[in-house]
Length: 271
Image (cartoon, rainbow, N blue to C red; front, side, top):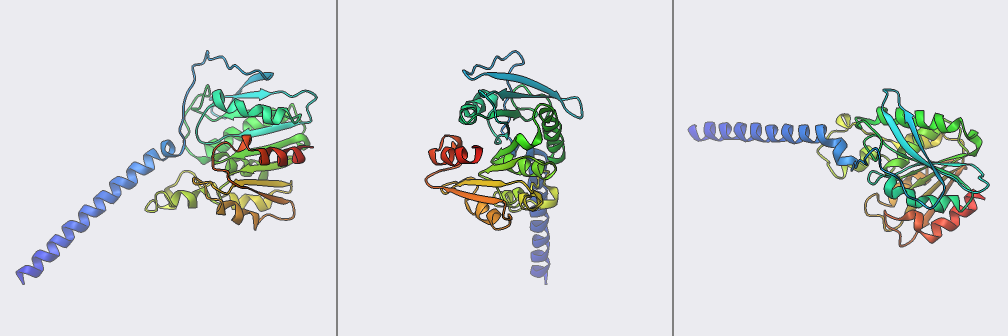
């Protein structure tokens, strides 16, 4: 009898121990999830961007007064604008290098540094805040370009944000590079013990694509180890007749803009 009582007591102690450990881990992930998703890096306010291409530095005040910084690269005899949302790492100091891929095809390209990236102020808190930032910046660029000449483009983490933006506006087209089917689902493969309702970023791309009437172009590297290729395969099955899916063989997650096959398809899209 005493042995049973002892075993029961030990079981309760062990259960309590694991519950405490779980709560501690969950709390840590909850309060640090932004930093686990976004690899932010800042640049001094006096930093001078150096690119051979012609560009204009643009600053936009967001809904809460935070300054958002971006670069607008300009093409000769521009046909329109690529509104580009980059990945979860890097700043305009490096992302600006992709501009020539688009300006060489006669499209201006605007690249935004999210808050806390580059020379943009503030701190990222959640998905709603980030979408508000992007919507305000998009509206600012829309004053310069008619929407039927704006192509929204998103890479990696930016793909879900781009899909949301396109669903709320009427761009000429949407280009997704290495997109995820659902960021909430993707993150579960990294932290399966973390409940979805506590995630500050759901970014359910699959929910927004059917709402978009403009042509949708999806590109994904077959060798992508960060966001598996199957994500785009699943997305391609839910987009309507306006959807186009391109597989890039021997392409990983990084460097798609430099991929020759991507550039050739992009040329056809932007003609």
